[in-house]
Amino acid sequence: MKKSTFRLSETDYETIQRYFLDNFALILPSDITDQKLSRIELLCRDERIEGPLNLLTTNTRNDVTRGLSKLISIFTINHTDFFREQLHFDFFTSEVLPNITSDTPSIIDNDIRIWSAASSTGEEPYSILMAMIDFFGDDYWKLNAGVLATDIDKEALSKGINGIFRHSKVKKLSRKKISKFFSRLNDREYLIDERLRKEILFRWLNLNVTKFPMKNNFHVIFCRNVLQYFPIDIRGQIVQKLSNCLLKNGYLFLGISETYIMEQHDLRRVGPAIYQKMN
Ligand SMILES: C[S@@+](CC[C@H](N)C(=O)[O-])C[C@H]1O[C@@H](n2cnc3c(N)ncnc32)[C@H](O)[C@@H]1O
Image 1 (cartoon, helix red, strand yellow):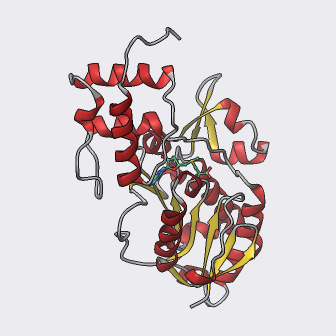
Image 2 (cartoon, protein in one colour):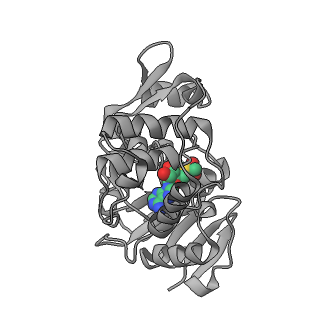
């Protein structure tokens, strides 16, 4: 890539860092790379603005403008994979799904509410869904279930909505899963089955808000590999808000490297970075 000649003053970058911290709880790196500078330069040209500070608007609670949303995409880290941290999916099918469906007399009485918070490009919510379909078999389609997938990065959300994934990612799945859930588009890409795409509701949501807007609580929340980018005090506040959104005995999955002391949030550890709501 051509080295960018675009420059951002130290004070302007500090203003962006402060803005991302205050609004999204994101700690940006102390130095900005040339690649990011080139992307910001392009963005300013596309938006016909003099500099990125013009994009920093105030309403970040419910949504963001197109320009700001593109700036967010430049700074977010979207690394993810299908069935990332496989042992979480083993626990999900061996413990969580049997437990949350054990009290209902018939399969159709099950209303299963699952939230993938910080879902990035969709591999996590689609993995949850594939695990559920494999677990319930054809009965899955009789359930009142589905997955809510949220993120602050709209480009990542669009990728999830489109459901097109690179061969290099899909090839890590078993052949059985690939033939059951994907069709091949070309040498490089696969498309996830339309039936699965319809089961996931992708929405923009900032985790750093005072209260989450959901009306009903969840059986399971996955909020993995995002808290590590936030300041420690904010991590605790977000875990408390996530805990408030869980049903009694519901489960919270964090990233494997993100283990915290949870008793203060009414959560008890039941597996590696897996917590259950006590009250
Ligand atoms: C490393 S990815 C994790 C993806 C997935 N959960 C996983 O474990 O594979 C982190 C995601 O968190 C999102 N994110 C960062 N700050 C956020 C915030 N304040 N609210 C919601 N999502 C945020 C980023 O856009 C990114 O897609």
